Length: 546
Image 1 (tube, rainbow, N blue to C red):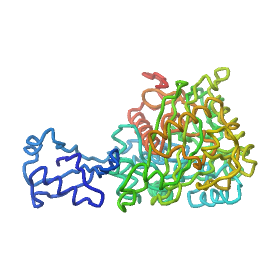
Image 2 (image 1 turned 90 degrees about the vertical axis):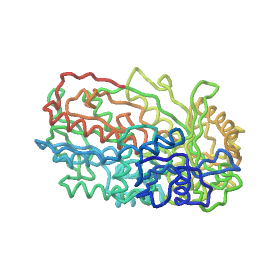
Image 3 (image 1 turned 30 degrees about the vertical axis):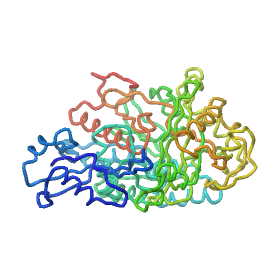
Image 4 (image 1 turned 135 degrees about the vertical axis):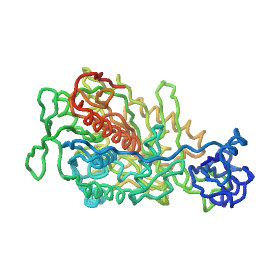
């Protein structure tokens, strides 16, 4: 196979036009191509008068491929790397392994371990994704929060109802394994090659439940409504876990466990800290959700080609170093989406965003965040101080919203002018169960609201219309990442032997893809140590936060 990169075609042209362009570059005929495969497809909209679709193709040729690579070296032609699926060696001795949490981290860890032949039990404090949908719909309809089944807790984790964005900054080769697995269980094939892949909130829950059923078919056991209560330890060695389900306390013996609890299981993190799991505080971010008309974002990104049928809803990612020295950036941008109520505790409000696979709603939304430093929240060096800091501003948002899970909101024009909003205009807030016009300065630390004001004006210079007066800000956004990181050694094992913290709850990931990859890495390491007879061994171990 050879790889041909940087094939620029006009909007309106398609995959076959990209192939014809590749053949023209290589001076080949269609008959010489045995197969072709799209590796990457992206939109180059830097020049609004010359928007192009950029393809990378892999071609299998009947002619001498190496000779062609040599001939066109330096012209975007190279040898295509071999594509191999992850090999999973079978266990010589099956172990009893608990996976705690069924978000992307736990899901991929459990899939690997059950395929390796281990006896896997998955604990998920929330409900199956089908039942979970009733909980989240009731929350949006009537403001009634189920603290165990919501947008944070339940099958699929926090990502199941938040667009299914699969972009990631990590370069791990397991990224492709995760993408291929998602396609295997029902995701659209396009995620394998689009530059900013997403599945969509309407599709991702079906993929998640298909993977869970596959785990069960392979012999794994999945327990819903099962919340980890504490660990059964012998000194610093894991011997089992205790969990609550159906109003009773149960005990499960296990040889090892993957801890994949996500970034919002604050109660569980407190318990684990009290039991001696070593962890350290880490910086995170705080801010607001901003909503614009999707048509404005499309026009800003595509210019005169804004109405072209083959250009999907436009995205953006903006960042700025503020005059204070802090970083400000947009996060989790959801084209054609809506803002969600993502609190998991009573008396608090926090937001996130989602969009369906078609991304065809009227509003675009994204978090606009400002860096939170350790010095802002660290109290008496307690590693869980970040949770207290998040809770403080989530309570303020709840109070400012007036209760019943309503969120405080403000137009960008009012926010920049320093006056409370009294209503909304062209942009209708999408947050349900509803918003209350407010002054969002009351729900943020001073450095955050002044930083967001500065960022809005700076981003407007990068993306025309970003600071439009009738755009809407909704507060608060506190959970873009976990404010604590668990310590682990070079094999991914914590200071409690047999416990492998992974994913966002361990402070080791920042989205679906990185969490899934970290879960796979934890499972692979656990399996390798078990087969070498070194599981739980304290020899050679250096615990680190790196």
